[in-house]
Length: 208
Image (cartoon, rainbow, N blue to C red; front, top):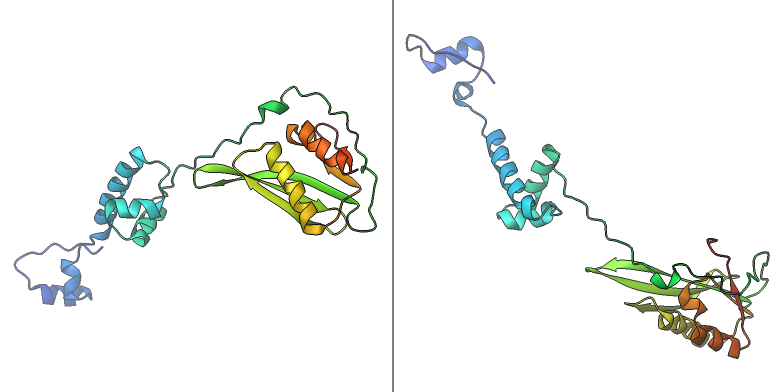
């Protein structure tokens, strides 16, 4: 910023001309840094009680445009606290002994559909809670042929998935493979499969 000291009542127009600048320059004092500093203070006050808030949630709190908040936060390297949700624990699997079902497909390569079905389930965090998604894939086609969604990871989740695959395909596999999770090792699940003459196969513990 140009700094000029006026002496002896020299006209500003003449002074500006003598140093090669416009007259307006002599009056200009940038206000944006001070405004940004004030916004930073207000953002910090919001983050005291809401450390995970980003620019989209801070903006309505301050009654300001979200683009403006995003610019200030980026300029001053202000980042929201990222809170990582804890994974749901499967207490039933702790200190669990081997199921007794061997891995029947370890060195097996199917040459047609509906010979080997492999099953697993995962979870997703959505709107403040976990949802569990069980799937069954045909090992030959690599197609997901059955699925089920639940708020609980229990035997009903995986049994419902198996029933869905049976109904969708109209077929019964030779092998049904999974890990040794308590859901797959439950009597209601294994009995259901064995009554259909399906051979149950399970990976060894700690093996994907």
